Length: 220
Ligand SMILES: O=C(O)CCC(=O)C(=O)O
Ligand SMILES: [Fe+2]
Image 1 (cartoon, rainbow, N blue to C red):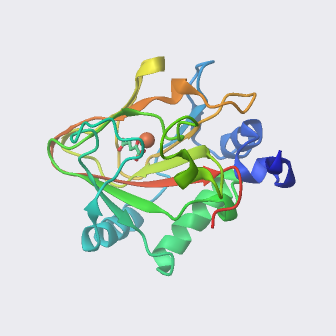
Image 2: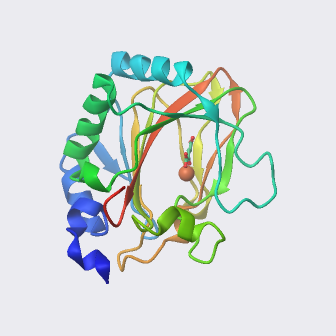
């Protein structure tokens, strides 16, 4: 496999290595479940950094998109911001994620922001691309499929907006600065359907997150 050419600790294919690195950071909790590797860290980003990212997202957002559309126009109703990698704040956050996880930015997609208004959601999905899906070649031919997802909530919505991992019955509540990271693979590196998750409807207020996805091979 081509993937053998790249350091699996740096791409996230070696999930144990990421767990060892991130788990060593103070305050990191691992959700105890054999089916899914999911870690949480409160206050990963401070409120000022989160507010700065929210301002960047508000200044430059577009309707979110999905791959392998199932015809449900309401499947993902949020807005997305492609954060500018030249922004010092974006660089600082990228560096913090890399330092915490050991994941090399070379394997990372550009950092994105997501914004959900009242009633908006991202229905249950997995972050990896379906190898048999119509969009697989388009999204995965260069960098391969996704390995880890690193997400940070930038605010605490007034109501709703939790992230629900239904296969393991775990719901993560959004809180300003809280990091949530999971391995989209099992220990044998196969894609893990137990990562299915739902960005639930915001009931009051607005919800902002950043998402960083890593790939098995270098990005772009
Ligand atoms: O907003 C959330 O809670 C989840 C977002 C998500 O799953 C994604 O962007 O892939
Ligand atoms: Fe997702």
